[in-house]
Image 1: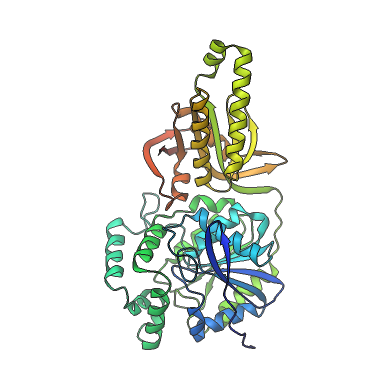
Image 2: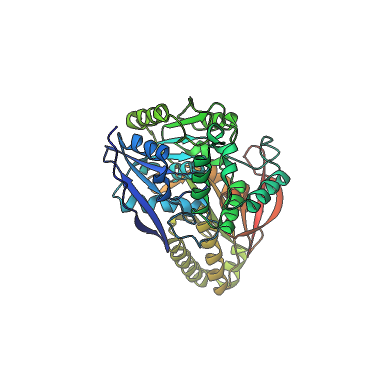
Length: 446
């Protein structure tokens, strides 16, 4: 293997946030490398194993690595970013390096970004690889192998108390080298120079709350799920769950007992990754994509029309629809159709849809109208300028329950906006007409 020179760190912007990135190699396949928990693209080159791992990938691919917002060389004072915002980091970096389609490789917590980006932007993804990833960390009735809240809080206290002396974290991250002083010193340096203590705690809390199981069925790209057979940080069953719930996925073990893929002999892992991404072919039959569906409705529209007369109602509706269209465009959404007394729109992320719903309701109140909104995120089929699928039906069924002036969302939406600062009031479970099972619904608190 011919060694590569350490790449120059460059910067691009995702909105107002500076994102640091590097490019190594010039292979025919672009490979976006998404790190796990904490990362610093300047520090990683100090570790011979990490360097060898990246150079191995760059033998066959053009590898693009970056620091997620809030970590490393990227802007740090950004709070706890949502998955929606993190996906925008990937788009920004791809644009900066002139990449229109890439393989996405996510390590550990990087799997969440990988899954969401692949589901939201299928046209930009040739394949995905995840290693040592899990779709949900927190215990839930339907996810009994997750960590209980008390256990998580105890782990967090220990992390906070030992910040600055984190070599012991190798006990779960890389047990094969946990007693080696040089490895302990490097891992401590990597973590402490990737985030401040408070930022690390905030990011860890965010990662605990993330649940992207609902995203998996919307992924169309060929997927390779890798997992160390003796990984003590993330259960093998979690990796198998990912493979079983992504329609075009395969599962393989890696010959490594460590959670960190760049420890020890990495040649086998590198070969598995590069062989897959260089030969993967996507045969998407239809344009399926993860979308957030926003549906709105005017409260008592028939009574209002009767009271003010047809001509005045026509003018009012035209003003309302124009204001709604401007709001949808403002939040980068797509207006699919108007429906007499409401709109149907799609967004790449739920935070935008919620903000847009609030905007539409505010503008409607200026016209003397009371608007309600229902929002759901799920897999949709795009055809021409229309969307269809169960996600659209669910949004419509949610809307049927919503009182005037309120916005209700599905549990899926709530799980995807963790870190946004949005507050929700649990409504309880509802049986949605024509939709299997009961669905937990939440009211957005203004």
